[in-house]
Image (cartoon, rainbow, N blue to C red):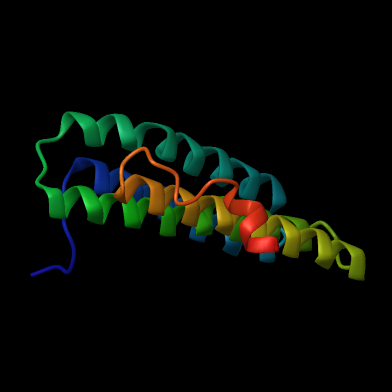
Amino acid sequence: MFIGEWNKSVILTYIGMSFAVIGIFMAFSGNVPEAYATLIVAGVCDLFDGAVARRCKRNEKQKLFGVQLDSLVDVLSFLALPIAICISIGMNKWYHMVIMVVFCICGIARLAYFNVTSEGGDEPVCQNWMWNCIL
């Protein structure tokens, strides 16, 4: 009926995502304090979805789905929403954009690194992965 895997932790992740989307709307509507509040609620949902997931009985497919879904929602909650808030409070100079791009690169790289290492166990993808990417 629905696409994806559904359990309590996934529903909590979707609730956090909903608050992130509402927060983006609030930020662009000029309701910055409400946008900050939704960022906090999304963070609380993200804080507890892993604990809830560990208590749920899930198969491997459900676990992998949860890891990927959590990372995608983190992009909205902790990258897109803060950038929307920054733009709405007037950070619109060229150097603000550079800061936001660097912020996004760091966030996406961290999430990708987490996803790769979580699929392969505790072994890092490669030693000094950051320097290997740069050089």
